Length: 257
Ligand SMILES: C[S@@+](CC[C@H](N)C(=O)[O-])C[C@H]1O[C@@H](n2cnc3c(N)ncnc32)[C@H](O)[C@@H]1O
Ligand SMILES: [Zn+2]
Image 1 (cartoon, rainbow, N blue to C red):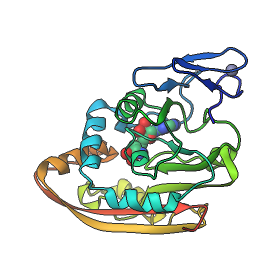
Image 2 (cartoon, rainbow, N blue to C red):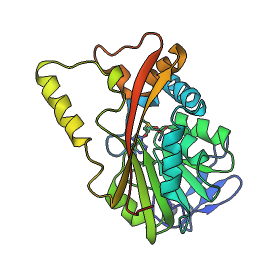
Image 3 (cartoon, rainbow, N blue to C red):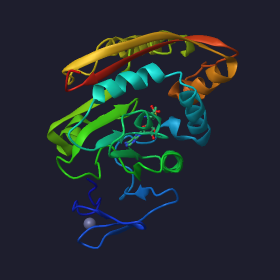
């Protein structure tokens, strides 16, 4: 499944690390993860969601089950793929942990996220790497998933088996609308355009289901949700006390389920 990030040959995994036939070697970090990020970050990889407090908030919010309906629809869409599942932008591993058992790989550009994932889910192989040049062999994955994370579809097509499929989770127009600051002037126009684009699932998808519900959150959970999303970096964004928020996402795939 995994490919050497230097020469693209297959990686052989051992207890202590991984190596290719050209003797490029990678040691395992604590928890067993592999760092396959070489030559610096490629593409727009630095997201505000990477900070340690965001990771802790996300772990607490997700394990409390507030996004369980999303995880269930994702699991239904993934189904029983014809090979390993790769989660691109896996964060601290929650969504992979909610799929039916199988061979799972999680990849994220954030080393802190991958370290946290590897410690929590030892049966899954986690790697530090970039979505834009996946350290994965051609046509090796049965399914590629991306949840609120980058989804370069050409790269997904390269690593997917011909009989495999991808599944994305992306925000719909109403997602967390109660938490967003109301933009004014030029910013308001841009925001309307972005929300308009979210009215549809990714055009590359063959099938999509919209998951919508209201979440009644106690103050601590509302605070966690705010901290784990990029909304926290928008000017004027704030959350105080308990909140009712709209969840509105697209679960989309190259396959109908
Ligand atoms: C909003 S978080 C979602 C995390 C997780 N999928 C979840 O929903 O809990 C986006 C994730 O994408 C990762 N990411 C951003 N750019 C990336 C890239 N170029 N390659 C791989 N991961 C990336 C971030 O580090 C972050 O963990
Ligand atoms: Zn190599």
